[in-house]
Image (spheres, rainbow, N blue to C red):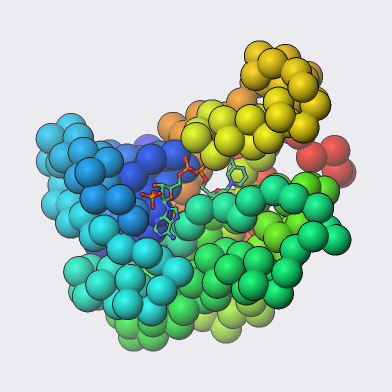
Length: 259
Ligand code: NAP
């Protein structure tokens, strides 16, 4: 299927590895030019180089912290008028509901709610003026079904989801769609770190932690960044113009819900 977005310009935040990288690679495969971002320059440059040589698209790598205004300005300046925005950042640490301080909440809200909102506020007016745009926010299955130890994520991402629900319906008439992708467990460094937390808390091995998690997923495995990226690229395509304000789970059936 031709996604119809060859030659468009995308910003993909937090994309040197993991789910963001999966999205960047799938967009590049569809012919989209990229601004990629992460805080650490080395791995970011390596991923950008690989995409340039594999797909022949233009890639600008911006080493910056997306949770800061300065970082976001660098990313926006590098992209110029962007047609596609993929919002992403690192996830908050696990813990217990009673232990988190105001500062812990502010850090999570900055990364997983206010940073994507600020980038949408900066990008949406130009997209609407040009009559076409796509925004995909990487959130979490924790929006549909809370994950106890990830209360900071449950809280911040639900706030972002409310903003998207209202805003997506105000911009859709200008040819701009905003949707959220909700990952369940995917084979990335984030998953290794979450499994590492289970190993530490329960005194089991990494293999046992992974096997337990797989047993709770009807698909019986972790998702891949390629599967995740393909879903993102489709939402960013010309084919997906009637999908507005949706929260799409990619969780191998892990969330046990009818709708
Ligand atoms: P990952 O493999 O750890 O990759 C995170 C990426 O984000 C890296 O490129 C990292 O590079 C970059 N990054 C982190 N903080 C950043 C910041 N402040 N500014 C710019 N770049 C930043 O994580 P992932 O698994 O892809 O997860 C991506 C998001 O999905 C996270 O919010 C995570 O909580 C959520 N999620 C993941 C899963 C899963 O199973 N993997 C499930 C549900 C939700 P630097 O460290 O160099 O900045």
